[in-house]
Image (cartoon, rainbow over all chains, first blue to last red; front, side, top):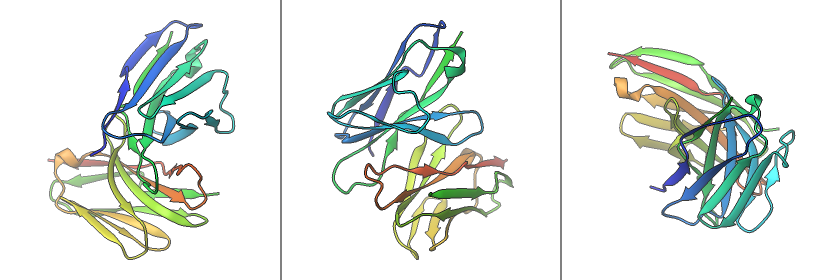
Length: 116
Length: 112
């Protein structure tokens, strides 16, 4: 099956610093990548959608200047949390979808971010 | 607005005790309905895609079915390793980037 690798699995950072999370599709070309945030006992909340070579589309209420998304190649997307604060602590998950009429999206392992 | 409601929120089964999880949905036009399994601290793992009412798919002890209003995930003779949160999601026609709308999930616990 399709494999999506997300790195790091967990990260602890100090308040005010920036953190970068990588999402790679290992065995297929990801035309579209999605970034989600998940709170405890809650479902996945879509933050943004990015298509390769284009600017990301952010969901309402998501600060695009705080959550920088880059999808520079068909196998790599990055999410940078800038000037992180404790309220940004959460579980971040990426997913990737191939091109054409492919409907399925495959998920990375997730990244647990803790801001202290 | 697309909506997905899963029930029950949590389900405890004895090993070997079969049951079903429900996913009710409202969507402008269904392109696909997806089932995922999520283990604690992990990303969701893809299980099934269903496209039209009457469709069924099976994988080991799991069987997913679809009607025009809901989907069921049937678990036959579950084992402790089936314990996880099962997520249902819908994808609508017109969702330009194939976005998914998720339900809150059903947390399944299978007791030995």
